[in-house]
Length: 77
Image 1 (cartoon, helix red, strand yellow):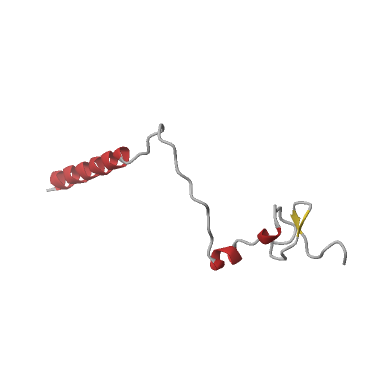
Image 2 (tube, rainbow, N blue to C red):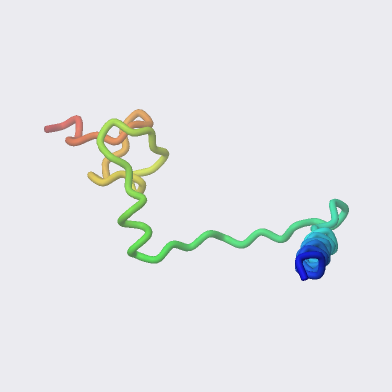
């Protein structure tokens, strides 16, 4: 009975491995990329803290990106 269970487990593993091999992406095809859109929930979670690096104001919790860092205040204050 153990032999049959072991044989069934090996066959199942081989079947799963062959499926993953067949499902792999081909290297020659160009990949289509889609513009990333975040929901308000993920946008709020992904905001960066003060002092973190940033590229634009919308990336920071304070909505102030100065010299590629999230700032607490504007320079005029």
